[in-house]
Image 1 (cartoon, rainbow, N blue to C red):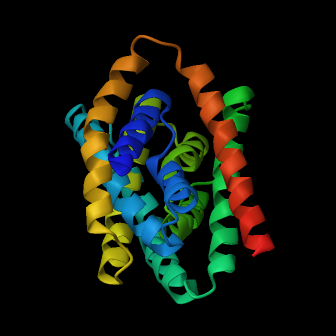
Image 2 (cartoon, helix red, strand yellow):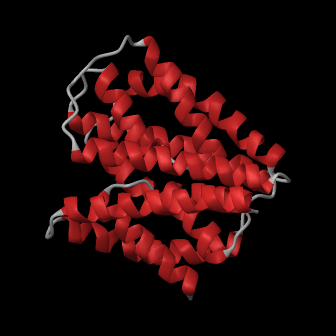
Length: 246
């Protein structure tokens, strides 16, 4: 029952704030339920995949996904998510190193999200080649920690393309969806996945995603987003602290 409730609350926060499911889910599973980091990552990736499929289909149907840009992202992200997934598997015996890595990634992802949300960042444009390199970095962290493609992917697209905001969101959503599918699949094959935990999370997540989407239409998202990002920085710091104190 607790897992269903967690899935519900996580999905509500995703639907309301847009903050990626992998970052929140992995941290909650490790700190709240005591799940092994590698199992938490694999389960979180497939949970995030299920949460993104409905929205991804809508963006694709509305032609708000840019196939050429998505292909460039995948050129860098797919090899990297494979490397990141196997890297986590290779290091799973070194629990403190894994916790430190995941904690730092959560801190970075939440910090960039918070910075972009609080401060209007001046527009700047990078050479297109940076897209593949940036996608590689994102793919590596998704495979290793499930933390995400969300804000970092959006920031990358905003500064390497001329896509509309809707196309940026749609393209990045599919980028994250495909990375979650590949990374989650690898973790499952490696035995780093809990089926019953996934089913319970998803059971709550279906209702939560609908509730979050409804709330987003009726309340201001900004205060909730800021609060959630601040909380994510706290739990990222806690993961780092735990790894150093073990």
